[in-house]
Image 1 (cartoon, rainbow, N blue to C red):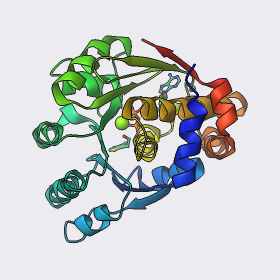
Image 2: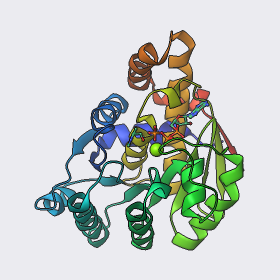
Image 3: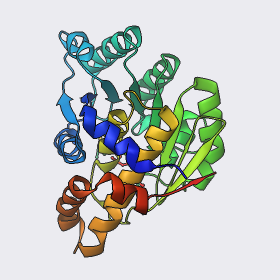
Image 4: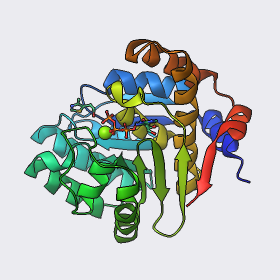
Length: 262
Ligand SMILES: Nc1ncnc2c1ncn2[C@@H]1O[C@H](COP(=O)(O)OP(=O)(O)OP(=O)(O)O)[C@@H](O)[C@H]1O
Ligand SMILES: Cc1ncsc1CCO
Ligand SMILES: [Mg+2]
């Protein structure tokens, strides 16, 4: 049996600096989530400085949720720096289907070698050229419908692909896991998916990509389940979720993780 908690211990021992080029909605949520789980977040995007900051980071995450042309240039500079220095980076194709700018940027980024692509089912289907893309940032497809697309996207790109939803699915194109848990209030709190992309980044330095990603998903699923048990609605859930992430111990995670090979 995989000791999922050992991945959390490894991450916390390093407390990696995770640089996130993310959207205005997610910035604060994501920084708090990363601090709660035990990593060091940084948010930046300016094309004039992003290469320098990337070079200092243990992992990089990319999300173009509210990006303009200057941000997109920053994204490519950051990714070029990460690639040159073997810094793992995660791509979150948020609402990829809604514009030509996003579709084109996503296609270019996919060719640049992300370690992991993490999105909801509609986003992963859209990355594979299928489905209608969902409703803006929200998924309208089930995870099971995106599993084959995730496997083919992983095989085509070399990335580990994670599809999140009620039960998450993660694959390197060959092996795969399903991660159960979480809570129906999670999609009712904005940017929790964006923030999860940062947590996946935190679990990459020095760790195997597929198992590190599955462990990050399992942390989220376990904390989400615990927070949801006492929450009155999305507001109190958001607060309880941060507390649950911070309180989660490696032993807890090993005992509670519901990760099964798929
Ligand atoms: N119905 C659900 N039940 C349990 N957990 C869920 C449910 N829906 C989503 N989750 C969990 O919520 C987290 C975020 O995943 P989601 O797929 O909602 O991301 P997203 O659509 O990219 O979010 P956003 O774009 O709002 O940041 C994941 O940990 C996922 O497992
Ligand atoms: C609501 C929203 N709009 C652009 S990014 C974002 C955060 C959730 O993906
Ligand atoms: Mg999203």
